[in-house]
Image (tube, rainbow, N blue to C red; front, side, top):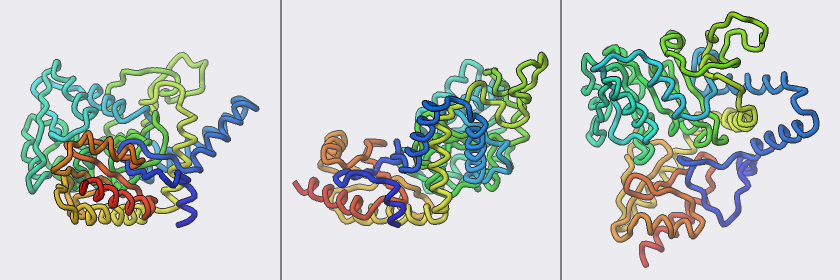
Length: 377
């Protein structure tokens, strides 16, 4: 465990519980970026071929993290929103078709579908507050439903959905399943094959512990050529690098969605971050995260006036614990915690805490103690 803690040399007076927003990098990622910068200073792109080895390793790590059938299913994108846009504006919509989303989605997984309304696409929002969120989502499907776009874990409440059940239900209804995986990938295990999803996407800067500006887009092989392309350039070609050819065709792999020069700096950092997750193993990452979430839940449940907004059943939670205090305005409580170096977020009508697998006991103990003291004032 000491080796893991050494990867996150945070100040002793900082209590970081905001991985559902932007996560700290591991030390190895900072070193990878430093090496890359020094190499650029000294030799420029002389060893570009070696950079491509790292980029290939990143694709392979992402494929394993998602359990994709091949790294050819993986595109490196700027962010989740870009990948969602590839899907939304790549499908050949017909007027009257529907998209099913939840009423709790982050704007990225709502606005992109609402932007299709001029094409006659109807966006149906489903309330997840009942006892059977998956049942409600599937019941909303009609013969006009083309696609269900759902977050694996809701960003505010932390509600975790049964992706395998949704995938099977969508498959039976001939509905494409598109998963915004940003609040699950890197926190919990994920399997795009078992979930039968058509598409999945996530940014690297949350639970994957990487930088902003680089994410992953999984596109199932049989669907790649069904998405119309709207961005073109040298990098998305099947024969990328053969600059003298007059004829061209998009890459058969998911690289067809990468129009121009790659974010090689981001690739260096994210590849290093994922190497840490692989060394620890996602089974252990998930187990350790569940322990920390349970610790927070137990502590908050013991406080008078605290109301938990997150599901508490183990199969319904990931890394997010959101709560509200009866006697406090959420904005004021968040500012108070921030002033005391407890880094969290104000989301979904409450205060959102989000540890990761490496979060030390002192961070959780201190946070609970300070919340208790503040509420007793």
